[in-house]
Picture 1 (tube, rainbow, N blue to C red):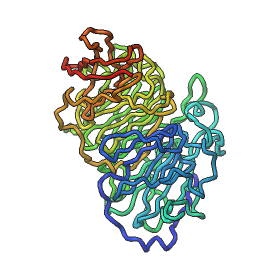
Picture 2: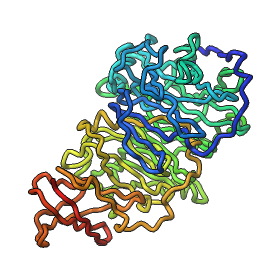
Picture 3: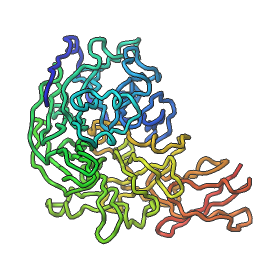
Picture 4: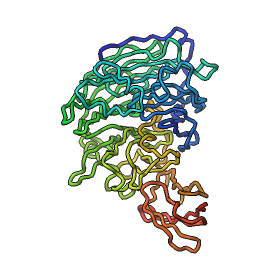
Amino acid sequence: MKHFAHRSLPIFLFLFQLVPCQAQKEATHWYFGRKQGFDFSNGTPIIDRNSDMLTVRGCVTMSDKNTEELLFYSNGRNVWNRFHQRMPNSHFFSEECSGPVPQSVLIVPVPESESLYYLFSLYPVTNNIPDTSANCIFGDLSEGLIGNGTYSFQLRYSIIDMQLDDGKGDIVDDQNNLFLTDNLSAKLTAVPHTNGTDYWLILHEAVGDSFYTCLIDPSGIQPPSQQRIGSEYQVRPSSIGSYHEVLGEVKASPDGKKLACAVYNILGHPFDVFDFDAATGTISNYQNYGNISQQMGVSFSPDNTKLYVTSFNKIDKTNLMELIRQYDLSLPSLSQALSSGKSIIRFNPCTNISEKAWPVNVVFNTLHIAPDGKIYGAGEGSNNENGGNNDMLVIAHPNRAGFDCGVSFQRFAFGIPDSVVNFRSFPNFIQSYFNNIPSSSGEECTLQQLIVYPNPTQDMVILRSDCGIVPRYVDILDRLGRLVDSQTLYSTAVNLTSLAKGMYVLRITDAHKGQVYRKVIKL
């Protein structure tokens, strides 16, 4: 870390009193991709097309902790208010400008304030010069990390005051896009202090083994504490130039007691897990969870007992990549936890994800807990053998071990055909919002709970199960009970475009040979 600018807050902030945080309502609204979004107000994700934000990777939202009302959202460059208008002081960048990595932006509430928020943003730096192209285009920075230069990130911040602009919120005039520090990797998260007021901002240097933890208290952002621990991030030689290990997420467990760091490298890198003391900001007890290729997304389960990481390691005696690996942290010893690590997708008899569904270039950039207690995976590439637009990875029961976690592809009718642009990242939230949130893990889940929509329809229907049941096959019968089509399901969509108008019956079968019938009208 070359520089750090100590930042103090204006004295008027001390007039505010702390109000206890309630539940996980701050994460109720998600905006991502090309003006896409989810609304979790009713407990399940409802498509929200109100967003005016364009982004490929970096994004974040903030909702009111008491009312669930949307407050504002950002792609790391511009900021929009709850009416989906750019804030008056958010005009440094064009509308298309966005953060190029999944954790390039983070919102942290200002301690002891009811109206102020820090907006932290990472900016790419090439050869110690800010990289304008990577900062202001729909950008996948990973292509730029192979070469003979030096690559890192600088951290900037703004302060949002929700009392400005007649209560719609705006960036404080003299607290806009201020430099904080540099020489960083693409890791950006925060953990609440055990005092219930302050936060720890957690960063990692671009090259080396140093973490930086900054206390955020009512007086401002304090200078960082440097801690050398864990594996070393390096510039590694390759056949196409030097490869820079700056990508990959850092996630805290929802209870704030552990940290997990993914480090993206095609050849593999140790998967780093640590203990974290939220009272002191101390990182300790480094554990290497194995050498894993192309780590990018990482997430703990809501109950803090499972750990997920994206993996391109090949399974023994096969040419199949793991894609997502799960570890069971509830086991009594480290050796047992390490031995529990396995793919939750490959050879899973209960998933709708086919071996044919995975081209070589599919990678999950982010894994995120949602307010419904599930984990959602954002990735890139075609998601199934039929093209798979708008399919999204969902882990329905992330607290469960192994295949019981209920991993599947689910389709959401966003109406935009480009899945690569839609689903490279989800909002980067403070993970404490999801600590021990209720999930459907204890529900009895059967095909009888399957919902078919839209119905009537013109082209396709979606099979939705809020508790995570995975349909595998569908037979389409006409009014006389004759079989007119059969489909193996690699997503939750059933294609009806080739059928004539009329009424049909869907005979839906799951992996356990359970069946249910649903009537559908083709327009």
